Length: 166
Ligand code: GNR
Ligand code: NI
Image (cartoon, rainbow, N blue to C red; front, side, top):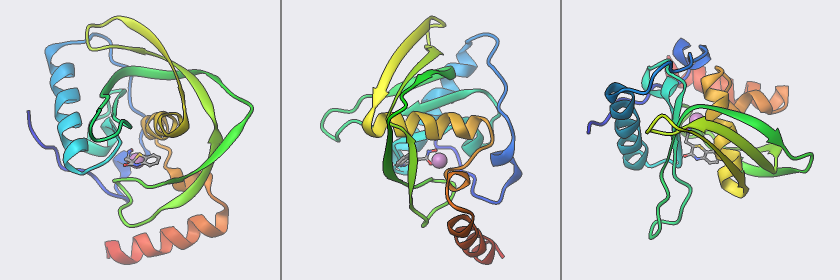
């Protein structure tokens, strides 16, 4: 396993669309394992491939309590159902360090994905896990949590980001 450098805004790779994995290989599994190690080290509760400079459609998540971790490794994840009910949760992003904001999203989702054995799976999430999987799939589509904020809130964060990136 290896720790991967985490890429920060305003790097362009965070605005690119990750491409579907055609075949689950040893390289795919290594990328997922390295991403999991990088996520736990950060620490964070999720990580998408764009954030480590890869454009494969893969994510890792662990929203479990420290004494009962639950690692999700997902290939080609997609939301196949979302609730009308929404929920508001404070989000942060390892690629936008130091900036948190409340984001409104569907409260529950159902997702389809390929597991590390190459098998199609479905899962349903609510609470923090639901927010996390939507946040990670957004990354694969080049979308950041600040894109869900009002123009004012987004521009306030973006100004600070550009200032500290100088
Ligand atoms: O560590 C993270 N915390 C978090 C909190 C609420 C909703 C989503 C997240 S994901 C984030 C890690 C990250 O940047 N993943 O892309
Ligand atoms: Ni993020």
